[in-house]
Length: 141
Length: 143
Image (cartoon, rainbow over all chains, first blue to last red; front, side, top):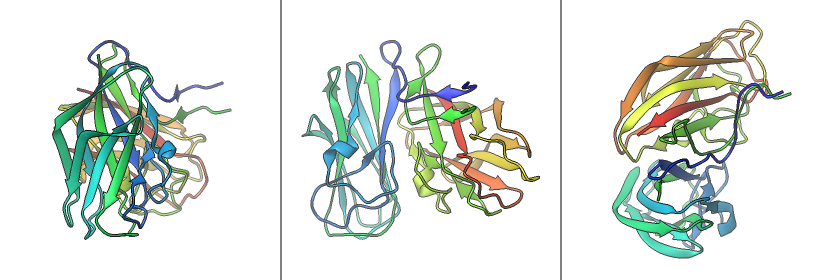
């Protein structure tokens, strides 16, 4: 018997519903190559495997307001939202020692079944455990 | 039997207008110091660092209806207090599970948040408890 259960991922409900999609990792993966934060969260280094970052949207909608957070590191970090393996214009850069960032200017339209991932690229390899995280607002259409 | 489960993710809400924020860890860390549940879930004991607990808010709204608990009741005379924090500061949204209690809620308090605010979930136990009872918390975010 389950007395209290909230399973994943939740229903989207009616049009115009706003919900966060989130990613997280332990660190940026100690590389200047593309690394992917894990869908929702994970205590592991940023992954070279994009599939570990995938979140599938069950209904059409729009992505907007990408936000990133992490403890400070010296290299700069570019966060990019990708849809079906392709970079979108939703991107932000965390400057040296920055702990948060925002792209509120760009949006991306999604169709039912589209796959959303979060890519990071650092200006130099960094293995510090700074818990990079990101969230983007998904608004159903 | 699983009597209390909050898994990863997603928007919910009876009217489709609210979203679920959730946190979870494997255990309370066996310490009486402040600790943090991980945003969504990570297969580790609670974190001594707040950053992996933080989730950024994109739109203005209200946090309310905090539900907390674990897969088993906390025991041994130990109580656990869960507190929602915004930008690293405690809010009035809090629940204390007394020893022998498996779940609890705060449906009284609410907290307004703005875009860019960062929400986290702290735990504080009255005694050491390192049992793997998978403490979890979820709250409603109503934009």
